[in-house]
Length: 428
RNA sequence: GCCCCGAUAGUGUAGCGGCCUAUCAUACAGGCCUGUCGAGCCUGUGACGUGGGUUCAAAUCCCGCUCGGGGCGCCA
Image (cartoon, rainbow, N blue to C red; front, top):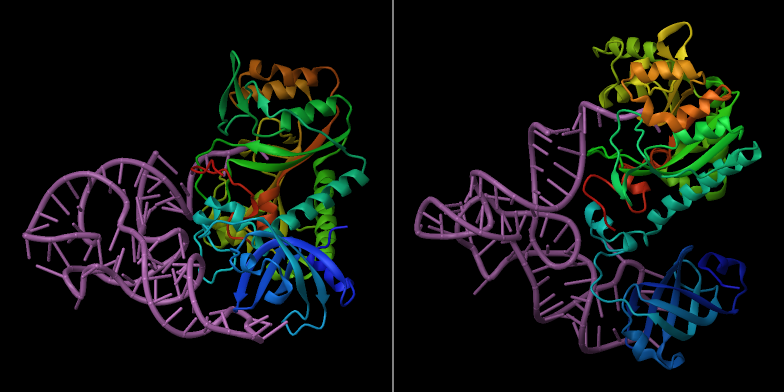
């Protein structure tokens, strides 16, 4: 069984072990050197003495970030800071790192974010960056577990699509043999088709593409969307599902990762459902009382969102958005046709989730194509599913990177994206 | 699409007309060193994005270009 740094505590003093990792740093004297070895779980000091190593001269010239395998005796009474070290009797160089490094892993100089992203493979060697993705992995696992416990089907819908823009967002175009195709902006239409198929409760985790020329710290052109759609459910039901699944996943993650999370966000352990709710119209009144001049039908500017966020702790819902600000498949409010049964989940000042009760009536859908100026021919594959038995349904879509960004108080959504795709970046 | 800002060694910076054959840190290379842990000490290598212009003189001022950062708009 492979031994990791965080296993060493459980092992006995003087035990003979082998451990693999990267040479994070070296401290060298003539006949004695220390190597700080890093693996995915932490760092440990390796003590290498000339008398104990046949290839001491070779090891003496090891470069930082080289990959080595160390065999030796575990010393748990070390005078090193951690109290643990490994007295090496054999060190094998598995991969020799070139110098100088394009950027340091532990250097005491700052590195521009752009430089970090250009050298992401090495940037991700920093434990604090690895942690972000451990967090994301645990969080997503928690959401999956919650969905699975609630009898959801996890599905995978196509990302290459024929046309059928939902209106608004620009799509990336690509060649598909003799035809034109697009990268899908959302699994929305396919989720709904599956509802007509009787799949009942579906969720999908997958990429979504937006060809918008944004240039902000909260937009990506490719992001991971967690999408949910439920038959015979309404907007209130899916809002509860959303807050309960998030609280479950967050609690589970905080429990598992512990102090690591607190270093990013100390208040995460206090997240509870239900989340506060405010309507779109109440939001306008509140904001206007704070000096904004917002009219019905306006979307909220980033500045307005910040002001509104100050009113709430973490998560909160904004409900009852005007039909003009919502896509064609959103169910109008039966009491006020100008409004819809829709909601956004906000985390601080950022929109995390957008969801709604959907239209399930075929004729109402056709009418909405007209209102939104969409060509119904483009939606034939979709509309067909409504014509032959479509239950009422509701759902939402959640941006995973934005969620992680905000939960960990990161200043840029690219921090919670392994290899971000933005307005100018297509590599690595 | 609009607006603002930036580009100097591998990395991060100082310099903002002549004291610049360009500062400092870090990294890197070599040397001393058997208990370091921000190791220390000595020595060394290494840079002004690009094309024009102004000037006796440009890293420095002006214009274009390229690349990048950010804000807004737009954004199921």
